[in-house]
Image 1 (tube, rainbow, N blue to C red):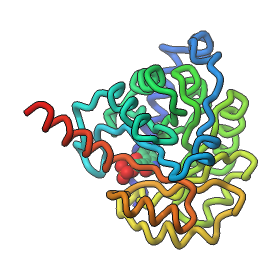
Image 2: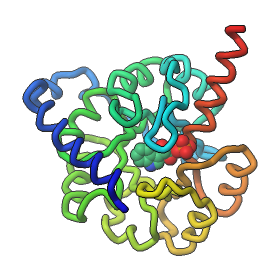
Image 3: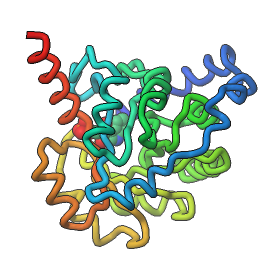
Image 4: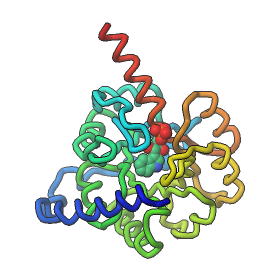
Length: 256
Ligand SMILES: O=P(O)(O)OC[C@@H](O)[C@@H](O)c1c[nH]c2ccccc12
C-alpha cells in the first residue's frame, strides 16, 4: 500500500547522496539565502482570516499534468495579490516538476513566507531549504520514524526554518513533540491510495492539540469548502491544484 511513498523516499535518499557530492553543505552555507531573516508562516496564517497557503505545483503523481507551462514568478505575484498568507512551492523535480530554483524565484518576487514542499529525509535538505530561501519546511509523519523526524526538526529550527508537520491520522501527532511544530497539516489525501476525504480531516479536529495552528491540506476544489473548513475550526488551508488550474485557464483565455 505504501508503495509510492516508499519509492519516493528511496529516490530522495539517492538524490541527496549525489547532491552532497556536487554541492557540499559548506557551499550551501555561502548562499545569500543563509543570512535571510525568516518570514513567519505561522504568524502570517495566525493573523489572516482564511490562512490560505497557495501552492505552486506543475504536476503530481496523482494527477500528472496540472499546469505544465506555469511561470512561478507570475504565479507568486498573483498569489500575493489575491491575499494568500503564504506560498508553498514543490521543489521535487521527478514527481512534481518543481525545483529549488522555482522556490528561489518565488521568494525573490513577493513578500509571502515560502514553504518548501518536498519529501524531507536527510539533514542536508534543511541546509538546502535555507540556502534557496525557504521560510518553512514540510515534515511528513508517515514518511519517517520519530527519531528521524526529531533530528530534522531540531536542525530546521536551529536554521530558523518553521515546521509544517503533516499527518493523515490523528495518532500520528504523537510522532513529533509539539515544541517542534509551528503548524499542523491534516492531509485529506491518503499518500498511498491518493483518495481524498475532506470530512475525515474535519473529524480529526477535536483530537488535535488546541494550541497548534491547524491547516487542512489537499483536494480543496472550491471557495465554499475553504469557508466551511475555516468555520469549523481550521486556521488555514493548503490549496494547489484548484488555483493552478485556474491560472492555466486564465492563460488560455489571454492567449486566445
Ligand atoms: O493540489 P491539492 O490537492 O490542493 O493539494 C495541495 C497539497 O496539499 C499537496 O500538494 C500535498 C500535501 N502533502 C504533500 C506532500 C508532498 C507533496 C505534495 C503534498
